[in-house]
Length: 102
Length: 212
Figure (cartoon, rainbow over the protein chains, first blue to last red):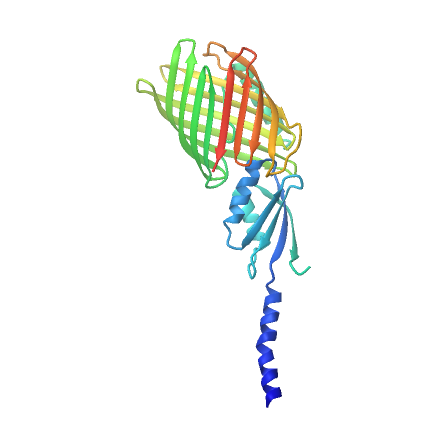
């Protein structure tokens, strides 16, 4: 009886662990076309910071890139990223993704 | 990009030949931006408050004053700016803007404004050309043209201080000093840009721009 109860109590714990690892925060690096000055960077930074999925944004003018840290359980598709940059007045060169577990 | 450079060259040539007018940097900013722009010298003052509805359209208020050869002229206008076309490359950006406005000149005369502006910049180099005409019917228009070229002596990151050396050629036929050459220093940090310089003719100039 005690063994059955322990096995049953482990199942929800295993399920919780599985769900946490499946939605771990993701880091996205976006190559941006046209981002050549601080005003450019400011507009992009504000646009992404206003998005609910973004935890943190880091702008690198030298690399022409912005790096996005997403909130746990949140996602931002490539299309959404492209639309946000387009709405800021810039273009996307490439998008690469890296999960937090890597 | 290939289309832009010939366009800027053509605009510059047209402006020089016709003795046409001046302009402003960043006529449209990012969506939701409130921009405050100001220019002052001993003969000219220009202040603008603009709101960018999206990356293509901005509207706002503008106050200009010119010390012309026939005396001072002052304008209060509502202005709209339109980003006609932008070219985004990996290491550079080029823009073409149009502007139009309407309002009054001092003494309650109607006034209209039209402008065209183009620029190309990378993190190291910058060029721009502007033409602007202000006036209405029987009031002689004040036309001004400005050409600029600049370079950054060092490259800075977003959170660092940017510095630029800029040379400006301006021509405003109705001013006492019609043509001016002005070297300027630009200091640029995050959302605040300031420029200051002294023309070859001895006129001090100060320019600022803030985006919120």
